[in-house]
View (tube, rainbow, N blue to C red):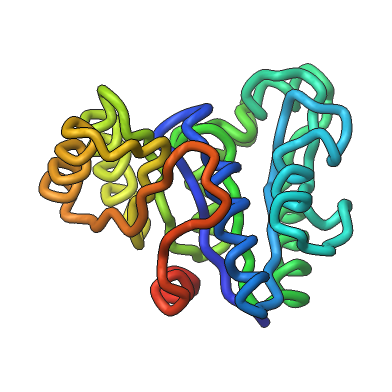
Amino acid sequence: MGKGVFITATGTDVGKTYITGLIVKKLRREGYLAGYYKAALSGTDSVKKSDAGYVKQFSGITQNDETLVSYMYKQAVSPHLASRLEKKPVRLDKVYADYMRVKSQCEYVTVEGSGGIVCPILWEKDKKILLEDLIKEFKLPVVLVADSGLGTINVTTLTTAYLKDRKIEVKGIIMNRFNGSVMHQDNRRMIEELTQIPVVATVKEKEKEIKIGTEKLLSFFA
């Protein structure tokens, strides 16, 4: 049985899928049997055109498409709304079983979340599932993806506070779109001081590799 880590972000379009692809690619190139999983995604009608398809193509993993994601919705809205509109509600037991199947076939599984940490996956009168419920069900630690630009100090600090309040372990923060400017460097310093969580990597736009040691990367998985 393999190990897993959950990748979440400070919001939508921060670069969570891109960073996930870099992580899976590095693991594969280091010779590990790397896997990927996402519970629910919206705004697509095929795996190939989705976040999951991007990670598969970018990283070079050979995992079957049907194992990459459990629920896929055409409408580009939050999963809870898409599932309601398309009458295909997420079931936690299916999500867990699908994740465990990938975990049984791979050494290291990178699980990608949807949107930011407060993302409703299902929100009906008799059943409610938030993204944090998946993390807790999978018993996984988190790596948080944050943008490097203006405003990131506030949103990153608030996100980590939320995760800590929910007793979810944050292994580290990865800052995306990092250009090395005075502001970006100061944002990194302030984030580490305010959250007391290390920035484990900074990633420039369109980088093909993530600059993080293999042992350090493997330590994020549980």
